[in-house]
Image (cartoon, rainbow, N blue to C red; front, side, top):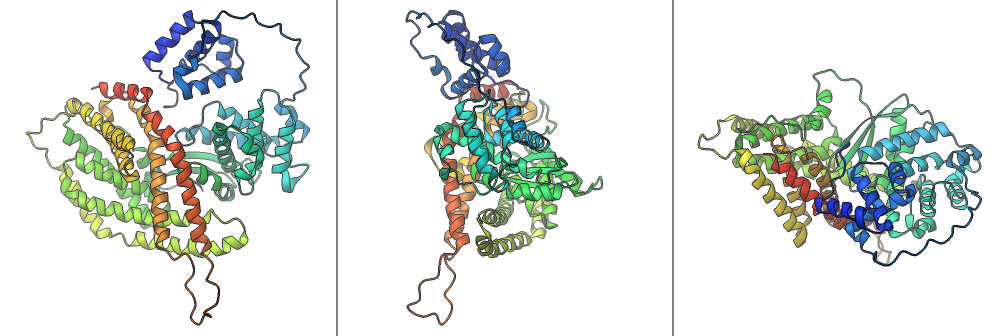
Length: 592
C-alpha cells in the first residue's frame, strides 16, 4: 500500500458492512463500524472511541478481518439478546505502566528511545518486506524501550533476565500474548537466536510466532545501530529492491555501528526473503560522479518516462529500454570499480533489460542481453554463498572453519565479475542504443493507449496460470517480474492505483527470488565435495574425513529458508490473487 493511501475495500464488502452497521445486532454493528473506520483511515484509538470498544479489541477485529474477510460476521445474530450480566465492581489495577517499569529498573531511556526511533524507521520503510500489520509498530517501539530492562542487574545475561521480568510483571495496556512477544524480543535481541529452544516463543499462537521473530529481527538491526551508545548514528536512506534492503547511516560512530548492525542481521536473513545491508554514507561525491548518480538512477526505476496518448507500444518500449540500459551501465561501472554490493541491483536490471528489449521490438539483441544477465547472475550467486556462509558461525572455532570457504567464494565472485567481457557488453550496448534511436515503422499504428490494457491483463493471466499450476519457481519469478516491468514501462498511461499494484507485487517477487537463490545455492553446494580430499598416505583404516562445516551449515540453512518461505508463499500470493488487488489493477489500467 502506498504511504498515505488508505486501504481499498472491495465495493461488495463495503456495501455489506454498511448494511450490517444499520440493521444487525449490536455486536455485529460494532464489528462493522470498526472495519469501516479502518477503511476510512481512522486510528485504533479513534475507532475505539467511535465503537465503544477497547483499542486491543479494535486491533483484534482488524487482524481477524484481514484473515477472514466477511466470514468474521458469520454468526447467529437472530437469537434474542440476553440481558447483560451485572458487572462486578472493578478490581484494583496492580499493573505497572511501561515507563514506570523502565524507571524501576534504571533503563537507559536515551538509548532505548533512539533504538525505538531507528526500528520504527526500518519498520515503515520495509512494510512490503516484513508484512506485519500496522498495530505491530507500537509493540516494536515498546520492545525497544524494554530490551535492556535487566542490564543494570545482570549485564552478561540481561536478555534472559529481562525476558523473565516481562513474563512475571503485568504491564498496563498489554495483553498476555503481547507481553510474551515483548519477552521474546528481549530474549532474542542479543546472542544467536534459536526460537525452538525458547519456551515463551513456543507458547505463542502459531500466527504470532512469525510476528515475534520479525519484530526481533528489526530490533536487532536497530540495536546494533546504537552499539556505540552515543545516539549519534542516524539513518540517511533506505533503498529497497527485490533482493536487498540497503540501510545508509551517518554520524560520528556510523562505521562502528553499521558493522555491529550487520552482524546482528543474521536473524533478519532467516526471517525475511531479502537480505539487509547496512553501510555508512560515502564521502560527499562530486556532482557528476557515478557515486552521486547511482542512487538517483536507482530511484528512476518506476519513474515516469514521458509517454503521451500518441505514443505507440514499440516507442514506449524503446523509451523504457533506453532508461533501463542507462541504469545498467552506471551499475556496471560501479561493479568494475570493485563494488560487489551492486550485484543484486545489477542482476535485476539486467533481467529487466531483456523484457524491455521485447517491448522495444529489438529482439535481435536479446541473445546478448541474456548472456550479460547470466554472467551477472553467476557472480551474484557466488557473492551470496560468501555472505550467507559468513552469517552462520556460532563461535570462534566455527568462524575459523568457515572463513576459508567465505574467502574462497568472495575471490570467485570477484573473478566472475572480472570475467564479464566489457568489450562485448559495450558492443551490445552500442548496438542496442542505435536500434532504440531508429525510427519506428510508420505502419506501426498500435497506440499504447489502446493496447496497454490488453497487454497487462495478458501478463496478469500468465502470472496466475504459473502460480496456480505450480510450475517452476523460475517461471513464476519471470512472470511476476514481466508484469512489474510492463507496469513500469506504461505507468504514465495508467491510473494512480498502479503504485499500489506494484507495492502488492513486490513481496511476491521477493519471496520467489529468495527461493530461487536458495535453490540455486543448494544445487551449487551439491556439486562441491562434502569433505576435504584425503591426504596422500592416509591409513586404509583411518576414519573418513569429517564433512566440511561451511558446506553442511550453508546447505542446511538454505533448506530451512526454502521451507519457511514456501510455508508463507501461499499467503503472499493470496494478497495478489485477491479482490482488493484485482480492483486496484482494474482501476489502474482503466485510466487510458
